[in-house]
Length: 427
Image (tube, rainbow, N blue to C red):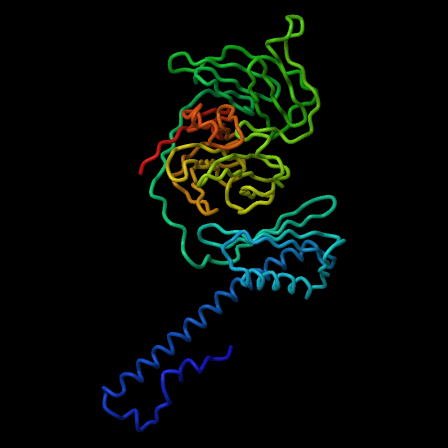
């Protein structure tokens, strides 16, 4: 790297040895100019070193991608979901493509064997590069931390959230979902092949009855399911089936009936209208919230990433290091809505839940984590939320919007435990 010597000479003419022996008061301005010059050189080197660091990390990301695709043809779709300026982002995308080309990869506009969707996102501290390698038969995700975020740091929240946990009930078999009635005194519980009803009597939840679901396939490890409540009917969704019962049926037709279902499971927290048009793909958990009067959706994917959606079809931010289970809650603090997120550990280790607040498309923790004795397998809103945006239910069921239900699998006992989570805000 060439030294910017013009910075040193711009303060005045070079001085001779004789001139350096002159009186101190005459040497002062020259020394000051030299110090200023060295300071400017330092800033110049530091700035370029930072840029080189980002570029080196992007090249490392490209090498990770190359190790999966080797010599083939690709098309690239670059998306800047960070605070990087357009010129900075263009420099990084150029370095990414150049690194691939040096290894024999052909960059095509269309009709390539592989499509690369390259997202650059950020958390409060670091830029994150995420590449989806889309082939005809599968999709693979590669990640790399690119470097520290420069510029103004996200402002510290002026509030904090306290999480409270209340034990509901437990059982030996898996609990796929728990839904609470609007009065908070009745609960519905979905298992792999059964539907149970609980009632709150004093301080204890008592099992009132269990009905068998006539599902046609055996239970699966890690199975998922959800209860969708209706006025006079119940519908539950499992991995490949949905089952229904209705209190309005004739007495001879009462009971559960199941049929094949292969679409994405619905969610109690988001309307179908809000999901329409979003390029979410297959998601594990999803939640809806509102920031600065704008409705937002966050969905977790099988690649371990959570994506934030606003008005458009594409994500506007990507978050990492969260678990697959999330739920939105309304506290009235900060942006009003916060997100409850699980930890990033696998199902063989204890888990935790904490609250995060999303401002300027950045997620910040606003609570201490609450720890559990096993992995969280379910984290959801306790009841249906209606309307096209997150705030529609605040005026009708504000207490429930400040709650979530969580289910863990206790690694010490092996039992599945259901909890009711509530939040309190302090400013």
